[in-house]
Image (cartoon, rainbow, N blue to C red; front, top):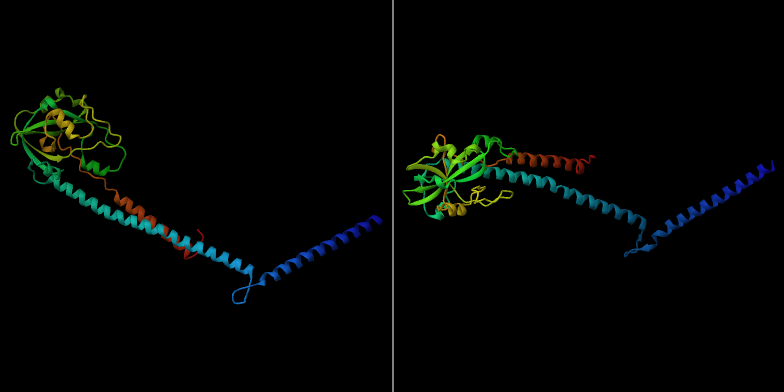
Length: 305
């Protein structure tokens, strides 16, 4: 019984002490709050630091939201601009394709000898008269046969036709001009590269040839260097080809009408250009619509995304 009384007395003392400490805390808090507005501004008004800190934080937060709001608006504007740019690029590409088709189907003109004029005639049809020198053939490989309709359908694909061979480049002496030029007679499969395998196509005598003017090429990345010693050419280097054959650095692709049964297949000029701009237009405008809606929902309708 005595123990119970002492325990109750001890509990009473602890509770009393805790209450006093709590009152002290409340008193200190009250004093702190009452002492805050002791500073006066320029006009003699009290400044409450607690309230000022809160409003400053709210203003900073509002400023950050405003900056983020207008910064994110750049995304739909940028994608719209890129989509419009692709529309203009597509128009330019279609015009370029039509121009190239017009050049390759126009009536042939006599081959000019002026180098400056030739440089402005790439893809232009020309006609020459003379005879081939089959003893100095060059081989550009590997090459696949040109099929314009198929290439237009497969433009942009990574895979290509499995059939490979070479284009046969033969010096052609122009009797009407008194010079020798280089003529791409066309495509032959791998097993027909050697001249003895296609003797029927090694035509002799004077003839007319219609072809398309081509200019020299620079080596593209990952394309091997030309191997002059082994007669393996990978790109059109007119100066080197002319030096090996003794011809002028003038090059034409013979048209399909020059094809001789058993010989190379003419018409190996690639005029198909990749035109994938419609895909890009859909992509950019689609992103513009999506990001515009997200911006509107986030900042105007205040929907949580």
